[in-house]
Amino acid sequence: MFGAGYRAIVPKHYPGRHPELIERMGDNLGRIYRHTLYGGAARERPQGLLYVVWNAPVIDRLIENTLQQLTARDDDLHQELQPEPGVNIVLIGSACGGQGSGSLLDLAYLVRDNLRRRAGLADTSKVFGLHLLPGAFSNVRNSFMLPNTHAFFLELDALMQGDGFTARYPGNLTVESVERPVDLSFVIDGVDENGRSWRDINEVCARTGRGLSLLFASELGRSEAGIAINYENSLREVSANGYGAYLGTIGQSYRRATEYANSGHHPARGGAR
Image (tube, rainbow, N blue to C red; front, side, top):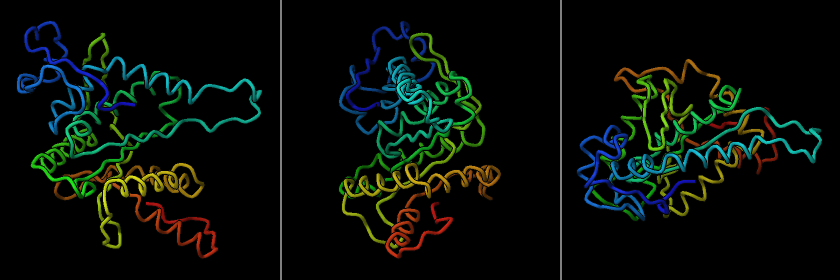
């Protein structure tokens, strides 16, 4: 939906024409050395944020159109098959690069805002984050990855604990919310639950895709994901050092389901986590 193919203009000469950018970016706007952003955020979170702020009206329409397609009734079926209410949305991106780390939280709230506008959909839908850690990029090393990841999860943690979110975008688009950006965040690294390292980002993405398929396109996954979200009190707990309990992974669910399938057993409940 949103990637490096988008452009963003850095208003260095006439910043007053874009007060919403000044309000959202602050001094970071002046620190961006490029005049036009294209092809990625050069590993810098402020550039990733500028991408989503500048393109927010376009992104907002894309989200709106996508939700409309997902929830539209198919007249050819004469309503004989009633879809389950609500949708599951997974926002996938790297927490360690500039583009994903800088834009994923704003994207989450743009999705939340679109769900709110559609009557009843916000109450029956779930928004998940799937965030890749530096270890998922075994062949990439730079000095930005760990600081970007640290900053991203600090911001995510504050919002998950109720700091609230307000942002004004071009085109008179304003988003205000006291909700959490995501219901649950899945974090993916380059090492599996048995301590084995995956070869590269392509293998990480392939296995992650299979895990997502299990979670959201199978009875086992839907059941376990629903059970996890229903533990609302657990997901709102705070550790002794002040961090929220909202992170999860999908490695165990993929492994256990494969074992059950190979063994011929079909448990009433599986081990998705």
